[in-house]
Length: 495
Ligand SMILES: *Cc1c(COP(=O)(O)O)cnc(C)c1O
Image (cartoon, rainbow, N blue to C red):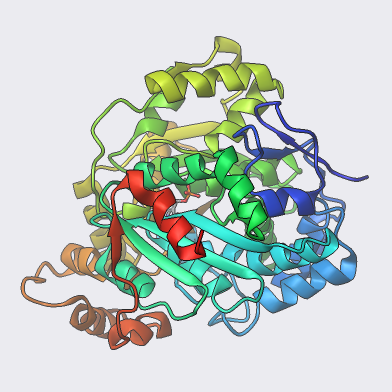
């Protein structure tokens, strides 16, 4: 049965998957959601005998129903290949009694590669299917990892251009280097003098600027998004939850049907929403453990039912989670409002005008499968130190947040079910913080020599992604105020 995509705000007509992927955001500013969550149509046993690519096909075919089998398999084969440093693509490692699902084996060593290595292929295929003659301009706001992963995916892709905005002082040195050294005529990287929320708001405003859209259209361009507001980002992220469960099943670590808990380091709520979708498809997941850093707006929301972004924005050692407006939460709000677009729109308008909203008791009751907590900076560092000291396993700062929160959950509830902790970045992407946690002596050392030290200490080779940017020339040095983002985009496109 064909799945159509509706806007969470009710002001746009339903579209097919390929059209939702091309548009990114709906015209009314809402996010596209599937009109129903399909159920897995293969048994867990069958799925457990499949490799990553086969599993991805079995999941994605249920959502991208207007893609032919050949089209979808072609996208999957091009995405999950030797760009990843392991054939398993998404391996699970045991440490301290939990399973770490390592999603950082792709070209830019963060979990964004899981979706962004396939998104360009989905988008080009969608363009072809819809006979789109215009050039696609990808606009992306990044808290550090999406930017590079999107650049890597779209650089040199015919028929596309990509513009990335990142907070100038809000990303790690290696993250910034990865972006500003990006090659490719069709790429533009801009540091904004503001935080991630400013960048994300700016991008959303450009998207809903009707006048600009007309100007673009006349010049032969159309915007789309590589952020997790694009359903083409979200759907590929569901696959690794199914794959992780089935890997544990295959290895005899769990029995078929046994529930597992999942802990996710959360920022924009895309990754954990994918886990929620996987669960809704029938994957036996117990609790969805939502882990925040000191920007704990989601923890407060899950506890009180009030979402309130009126608070100081904290720069932490887990910058990819430094977010106060979690865009993808809107998809969950729409769902717990009973797929009621009007109700959701009211709440989002209140978020825009007052910076907060409160859900009803009934909606809050629908969130009981979520558990939220946060890890303060010192707890995050302590968790990195503990895992290294007790298990010899090195995690990055984001994963450490999830790991620390998972421990709080177990302590509070005594729930000893098998758990998957989602490991979202390689420790080599946040070397300075990781080495500070483990070793303490980082003064006067640059990030690359710290990477060498980390390699020695962990016995893991410095990843190619870090070696590549060690000596690469800086190709992008543009900066702007958040209010100038539209001007920069126009300039780049020659409008
Ligand atoms: C993007 C990112 C996150 C947050 O994921 P969301 O889908 O935005 O919740 C966590 N960790 C790392 C390393 C990331 O890059």
